View 1 (tube, rainbow, N blue to C red):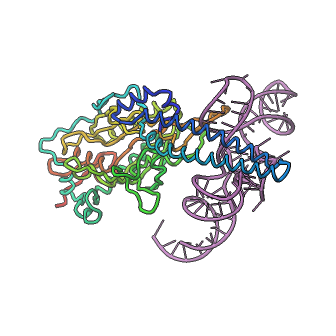
View 2 (spheres, rainbow, N blue to C red; view 1 turned 120 degrees about the horizontal axis):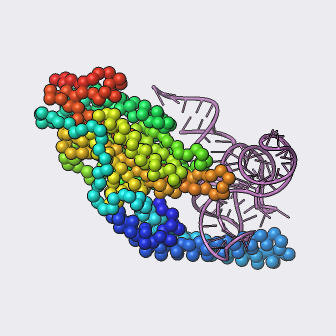
View 3 (cartoon, rainbow, N blue to C red; view 1 turned 90 degrees about the vertical axis):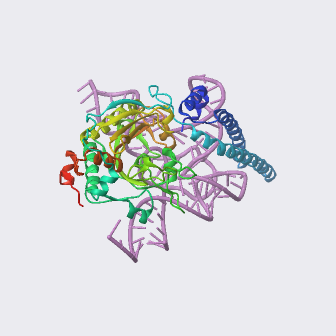
Length: 422
RNA sequence: GGAUGGGUGGCCGAGUGGUCUAAGGCGGCAGUCUUGAAAACUGCUGUGCGCGUUCGCGCACCGGGGGUUCGAAUCCCUCCCCAUCCGCCA
């Protein structure tokens, strides 16, 4: 959420930003409601002040008659206050969803519009095959690495069993990413796979509604998390940190659940778009002047991880029209997926500035100074297992249908090649 | 799942209807003392919103929400969380 005062003082900027992002919000209605809210709040403050004065005077009343008269006046004032409060609540009920739908500001260097801008390539060149490359579904079937049919019986379309070396690859990928992040001073965490809706909303997800990506648990205020960003950000909700503690870097392993409502077709074949996957996520809480550098750092780590895996990729500077609400700037790594014959998103890192911190109420205090300030939050994918698997299988496939294991994963996988079983 | 006790400022902790304008302590800031530091002593020290915009004034906030009352940290209802014990269990 943006700051209310900031919106009032920067109407044109906010309108232009919404336009750049292709988000339609009635800013004029927001202004109208916010000004109305402010005047109602002043009115309520005045009525409360008068009522408080009357209440205090009752103890000092001379006689019973005067006391009763004052009680009547107090009662009248409290009733007026209650009716103003009711109107205030109605205004807030209309205003709050509008405020929440206004996206974060956009980094001045982010591309405007809908066109992704490639800003870098990985160290690994695109593979050259002297045979028609298979996609990961075909490879998975030949090598007995995944089972979509059984998963469909158990849980429906969009689920999968990983089997054999694919399981070892999942473990190896987790271990590899965690090792890199541990060396970089991240605190390691496994996180809850469920979170309160309040936390989801603070991060910027809508747990209910027709277009939600979120599975919610009936009869509770909990939802399955779509990413550990939710739980890691929620970790410090309502906390006041000391400035010296920042930046805080945490990596979290969680399962991620997504309804993927409405997404079907060739792009969703196999592991590419699934309802559940495991992810190692990076998260940071920073001072405002640290967040730009932290985003570059996260991007650098993602590159290091995929360079280390020997997977070719390109880096995308996400254009304004594709940014999610909380993101101020976002980079994606897109790995080359020979079976698809195109690049596919494997990581995403965003600087959300104070947009999430405002609703989650995560602040910091500078020693010797009065008041508190909102922290900045950032998130980034270290490894999303399902998509990393696609990239590994398709890039490392051999003419005979076997798949070579990336060197950095061999210690955990325990072999250097996956051979056909049938 | 059952029982009991709890949730108060950055932290600890007192507070069972009206000088709560929330005691006291810790921490923090400033000062005295000191060559310097520590200790000791003295004073100041919550957050948010609004108005005046030097000084200040008002409102809200004692886990969340609702209620009783002229008046609630305090009484009632409800939800959440924490601790301990019991039950169950990987």
